[in-house]
Length: 309
Image 1: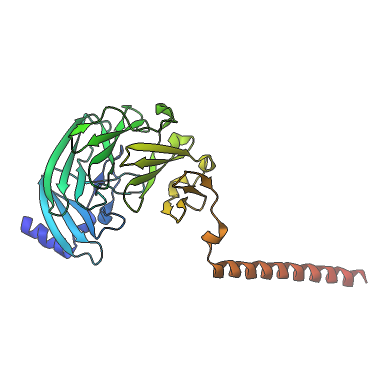
Image 2: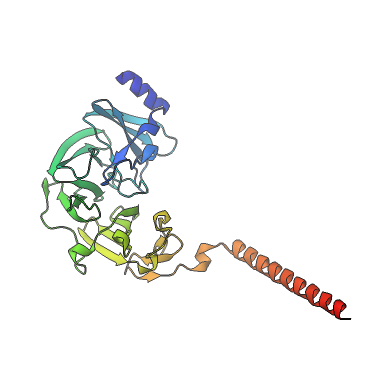
């Protein structure tokens, strides 16, 4: 069976079976996209194989299989947002974190598997009491950040916790924005993007149905910033918005931009939204519509003049 699974992986047959978990709900799956870094050459996926987990490393370009290994137990690539954004791979490409899939909410304990990413070799298994999901890992694998669900009935209430992978311990103090009250940071993670160097994890939250915000996590400094986004409150398309990197910072859909230096909020520039050709084309369309309206108005006036004579 293992030989058959390896052959199927090499053929790309099982890639679509890769599953992911970590959020407080079931069924969020990163699928065959697995996890990669912003600039890294490799992609990782996990495939359930009975009582074991098949971990596959492939070339990001071309999809060639570069290595496979089996882990005892059931582990998956963590999903960190409801749009199936994936995480778990450090920016240097050396550390991969997998999480045991949840079967219910809440759960009494959470288990993570740490791998040497290049060799696909298990280095450590970490089991924590309480309900956690994976959030991010620092660029060189010194710290992993977790979402600790603090309410057994409300998954929008949580605390961000840091786990020192070198010391092997969960730090007592949560990672919070010092300007915010701890109970103000709540909600569901909608989408995620990373800085190019893998240091900053940017997550758009719905704010628990009230005021959406952008959570900026510094995985090196172990600090966080919460940027309130009142302009997104009440939007029906909030769950469809995505974060994209721009020269100035981040763009939230086509609604607004957030500077990643001072976290100032700005309206997106129209020139950045449309290429010059499209803007020129839009002007032509507007002129054509205006000309047609004037033509219709003139014909109506002429018709009334004929009737009056």
